[in-house]
Image (cartoon, rainbow, N blue to C red; front, side, top):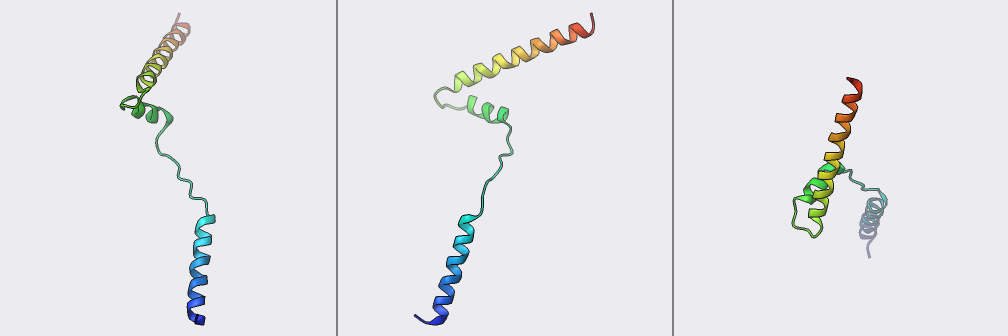
Length: 74
């Protein structure tokens, strides 16, 4: 092998090593609520359970908001 070819090969290996060691963590821009909503609308098994759970959570939050507002304004 020529010196030039060895230099090119070692440069490629160094770049590959650096690329492999860097963290490539991508943060999702969707909230958990948005992810659950997408899942609830899908045909995946168990999606209906997610939808029912979200509906129950919404109902509980609305009920708690009504109770809180009733306590503030008797």
